[in-house]
Length: 180
Length: 266
Image (cartoon, rainbow over all chains, first blue to last red; front, side, top):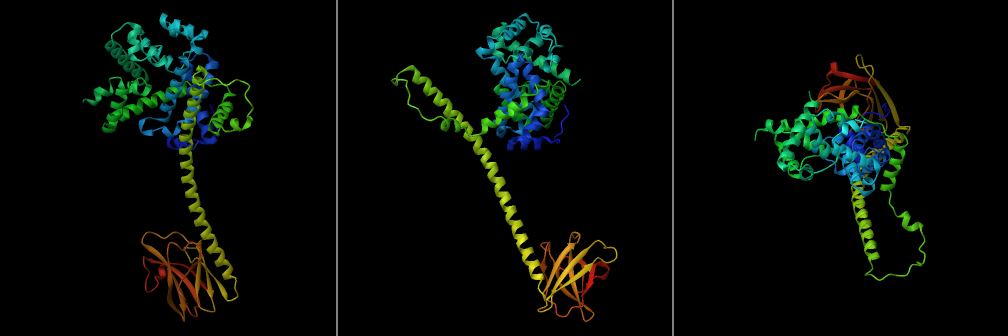
């Protein structure tokens, strides 16, 4: 994406965001909307819904700008977490659950064939797709579907301790794929 | 605690991805303050996620950007228009007793509205505070500029009087770019100086003005750091010329001729 707006350092970006002007929005949107959209699409496969979630995400980023704390993480991480949470919120609504796409996705999860059925392997999914099955399953349920460890333990009929251990192992695996 | 072991336990990734439990988040946020290695590991993983995320970005539809900005703007403009826009019309719906379930919904809606207004007020307040700070700073700056302008303007007008003599002091050899103007009041001997082009002084040095009276240099005053526009120096009777030298802080009794920067005769 070629952007004509001047580049800002992370702290300047935070200032822009906190002042809430159009200039800041233009830059943030040009720079980050694609990455945010990609995270949203990895959770909400339907584009119409994903567009709504992206809108929701930016509105939240704007409203919550004053709560962003640079000491707790990078701006990108913060924005991605807002995008993911917004997507997960939508996925949990009745409206979405009743939509066909989601039913297919859910079936896919229980059939454990996510990567096969989801050719749009984007973002984190493309990395997760290469993991071994028991790791993939844990990341899928926790990251992409937002289930807590307790919920996963119930769902998979596994002791909570095993879920914890497996999720940690999956995350260590994930890091190795990122930082070779 | 072995911090390296902690770093490689997967907790860093869980934290960054938003998969950590509340207790884990608290723990890691406390620990990162004490262990730079942990802090660096968190940032490293954030950066690698960011790089990967930026590479695999999926462009949203092009028309979405404007509608999102509109949404942000309408979310932050005061939503009183709705209230005033619709004239109050007499309701044709019969009033329902308070116990009715319908009222529960009204109450719930009112509560939601109240909460939304509340959080919006917080948002507005933080915005207001930021603006108020910026405004105060601008006002201060504006006041200082106004003061500067007024004194300069008054000075310029005063120098136009017939009793004033303009003395141009060009830069001497090695200081060709420097230029100073002295306005000399021939009636009472007051000396005003305008540093047109004069470099900043090195540390612990100060410019000093000299008047040549009867062929001898007489101290005409020091230029302090406030002398950026027109400044008044010492009163001098019957000068023939003026010169400026760069002296030690506080000035000298006699000019250091090798440090002369500008000079001009009346």
